[in-house]
Image: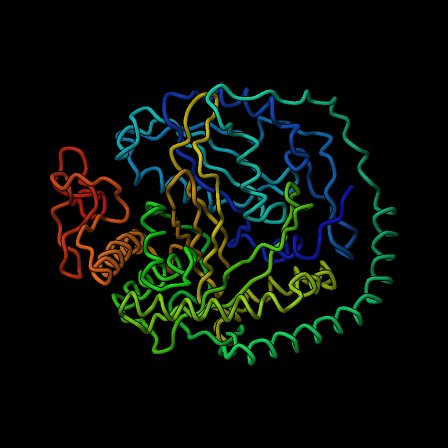
Length: 516
């Protein structure tokens, strides 16, 4: 039996029927992998992580945080589902299915995960007909981005032949604790936990002074803090229906863009692309504020000893996105400066201590506060904490396989909540980067436009960088080896030819096709 950390429990506090707090993604798998083979593979690996077979047990009247216990009634078939796309089996159908599945909360009476195996991917560009997809959902209370990546390494292999696995031990779930035992533990925790608060306050004050000193010494601007973001259509109450999409970029092309600003990083480039797409989307909606948008950027504080553990080990930076700047290279310059300030401040602060404040929130009070915040629509009564979350999870840069079938791409999904109606999740895998926006139907029903703008901005930014470097050999960022004879014939709103590949038997891409 293991008590949830304060940070893990926070994702349970925040969850309401309209706000499911799971993470997940869509993995596209090449070839005719069938459901029975997939089920057999998961069955042979379920023992590799206890998280797959553990469920929550609540303390009496919510006195303290819940515990993870082995589920005495664990049944694999409650967590594996099978479906197929109807004809034609295209990208629009897959993302709509994923959006519906992401909208549904997980059952807290069982281990908090599920996989949906999807067959019938027959009409998705660059995906062989007959391929399959895996839509995954795991509660954020159980994993963060890095530990979610570890789950991928459990169910996928680095060679088509697979690997030898340790034999499973006989499943002997621990006895479910009684209410009296849980009550006594809760009382003990409530009595002793406040004793740790003075030391935590002292460490926070000391690291805050240190961070401010280093910022001044290095001549950096003061860091962006919460509650300083401008209000936009993204920062309102969210509806229960999720909407999701993804854009793919070539990793090497993104790396090349760092040359525009010496000292910039791949993450700076990605933030610049996301900022440019958000700027373009809000301009189209006549909703771009004069002040730059603020992104919350999660930062892993997972140590080497915690590398293969589950749960959440994250802190956060708040970065101004320079959405008030139209020029892509100038925007990259500003974001590079802002991230440098954010990193200096974050590294000086004791991030572990800051996340420890969640340990002092009584579980029942935290859940009640979240429900009141949502039902009373309090998010519209104060300035946003931030405008958008942009989270970057590095994945393996080698091909992975499931039962001999190659993983073509993985696109991630993460939760949103009231006042923060958009998250952009970046995942890198085998030379490609996926940028996946997740929002609510009432906030961004036309999320396909944002996905298009991500690709457009990436292409334009590359053209600007190559022009600056006096190199005219411009290759579209999201197509490493484009065939110009099959490019979409549409003209974008910026007056340039669309650089997406056209659909089969069509002159237009998926975004500009009249049928889409």
